[in-house]
Length: 386
Image 1 (cartoon, one colour):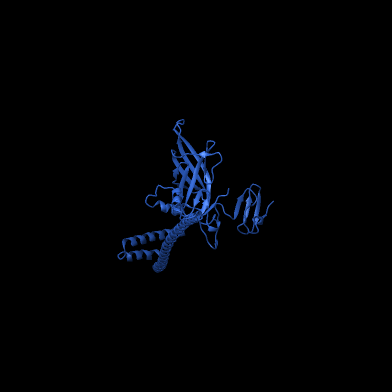
Image 2 (image 1 turned 90 degrees about the vertical axis):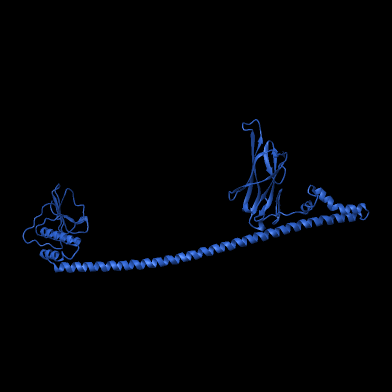
């Protein structure tokens, strides 16, 4: 059977009934299973009733009031979510045959759907879902009557007799005919139904007003918080922009200062060295400045003089590990000791691209010489001997 639907947003009561069929426990909300008997929960222990939303997978533990096989509980707005809802019931009963003395029972059943709009709901806002009564809580005329002095222990039958009493008294006194009595009874019943409708309507209006007030208050606080966050973010952005501008100006100033200092140092060094072109002049410069400069500077100049002398010696009588020149003119003799890329020894045919025209590769294993006639690819080697 299709589950009835309840529009989200209204508290309602849930009534469930527990039965036993063929030693199996069942929970029902709309009908008594055929052949089932009442499962008395009066002495049951550890009763746990949970509501499970099949769409969001959220489980909420409920707090039921137990009367024999009836479970009555509230479904407040705070736990309502759109989707099909299922109940899980667990409880224990004494059983001396078991080790811990308790027999555990568990059962479950889908009970209702909660939908998001009134158009989807069954019978609008106030809905009867089988024996699951869904609607806004409010006092009926019977409830109001019971609050009167001396009526608290009376039943609905007593209340109906109370409603009929004026008519029955009138009939007994011969003041009304049977037809008039029936009309009076119907009028009393209609009055009671009207009172119940008004009570539910007023409760609905009160709940709606309270909900709207809370929503307005929440929206106001949310707007205030958002405004504060926006103001803070704007101030932070402004501060960051100013800090970036300041850092940029500082970096520019430091760069200019470093550039100026470097230029001044280079100019001073160039002027000093230009005026002191040889070793004797440098020695004299050290002597001239010795009395006027800090000991550390004098020590640096002496070290520099020593390195210049060593450099002169290397230039005059040097053997160099690495030397690069744009042009080399040999006026007497040119001797090569060791390997050079002018003539490359090898054991195989050329596999590299020539470095320059005329470069040679000697394959001393095959007794073959190759000469470079181009510098584009390996094929630019030409064999010059057989």
